[in-house]
Image 1 (tube, rainbow, N blue to C red):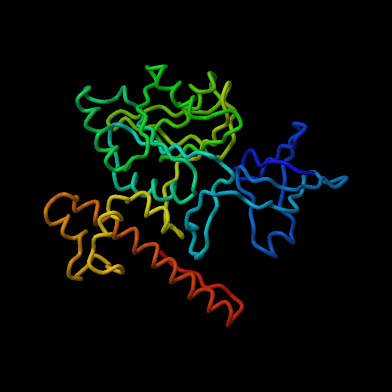
Image 2 (tube, rainbow, N blue to C red):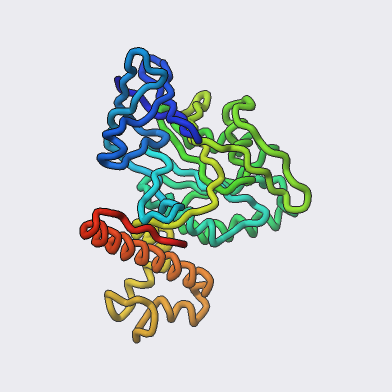
Length: 322
């Protein structure tokens, strides 16, 4: 029997079949031991429901058309799939206390999925002034490098409808962002009901408390569906070269004019990227972030290859700290 994983929390995947029936499921032993596969929210799966068994069994995770992937936050040098088979990624960042470095990292991971990416600048009603809001929007648009940016306010129904219009019937969008940026509140506004718990906003920093603890597909009336992701603290990169190329397209374009095609933008002569930093046309902070993220991906790749070599010799994977 085929179904879709519609919810994934600290327990077992919840699978919905075509006829609307829902089954709390566990993974087949052979699936876990053989390929070490875990179903993610949005996965299409084949399940069985044995007689006398209190749960369904996921027998197979069908091939994914895309996935949102980060490095496993544990010591293992493995990828962790947080969601699969989606059409868009909404990267939510608040107007106040914008974290540019986190936004860059989120954009890399979002673009790596191959899905269409949009940035949602949330809590616009908390901006100090209209001028301050425009300054933040301009900064986000420069970082986003052509990725569409929508400004969202709970007090502006048109801004919420603009998000709804981006999720066509039959589409699934991921809502990504740290805790307190207003993701669950936005989902409630899109649905028109309190379907997601929201935390009170703290005085002083205007941040909400962590409330969403599961990844769940939520249906939006008159539109498609959205996966409200829990606030993700760790966003370590995995194999994200393509995502870096898109998220830092300004630097990649400059690199085309370097004297050497394999320029690492270090001490090589004729480096167009470093020249742009020196003349001020490329912010030094953005260049440093690019180098840091690029090196992080290369380090992860090297550790994966070393872990594979060790496993081939010993039969046991190596765990890494940090």
